Image 1 (tube, rainbow, N blue to C red):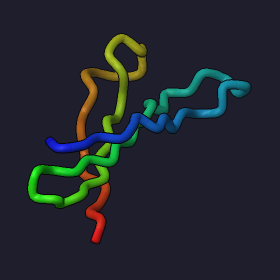
Image 2 (image 1 turned 45 degrees about the vertical axis):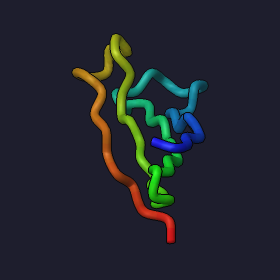
Image 3 (image 1 turned 60 degrees about the vertical axis):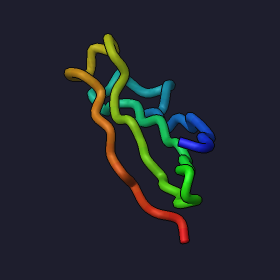
Length: 62
């Protein structure tokens, strides 16, 4: 990786009852060839809302 921005966290509303929705941390990543990706990690270790975090590709930047 050449450059990374993030995380930008998306979380359920804190003022509501605790939900089973997992937290998402979004990152903007650029590789050494200049290609840019938008990826996110769903879940945090030990949050009590599921298993291990999983990584996903959300999109590509043109």
